[in-house]
Amino acid sequence: MADTTADMVDDTGNGKGKLFVIWVLSILVAAAFFMAGGAKLAGAPTMVDLFAKIGVGQWLRYVTGTLEVIGATGLLIPRIGRYAALLLCVVMIGAIVSHLTVLGGNPSAPVMLLILSGLIAYLRSR
Image (cartoon, rainbow, N blue to C red):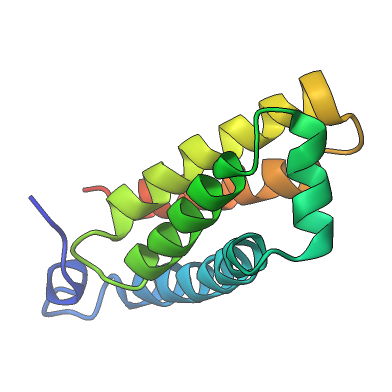
């Protein structure tokens, strides 16, 4: 079921490296999503302009920012970290599609965050 910190480290100490990698990745990815989601929710002009270009209204900026902040928080809670990472994967797929179909430009940032979120989800799975 849900993995906890104790589940990942057995009596011989195996799994400590995996646990370290999971936490480092989780903290870094959470920080990126806290900043991005916070900028969206705070109404940073670049975010307002970005979502104006998408053309569906600013409500999507609030939804995306909220999902990013919730996902970032969830990455730091071991019992739900996998699900939070999967949520962030879905958000990044939407960002990549938006870049490729509407916004143009380089989608490398959402692609990298998708890969890292997917890696976290994989590492947190059994």
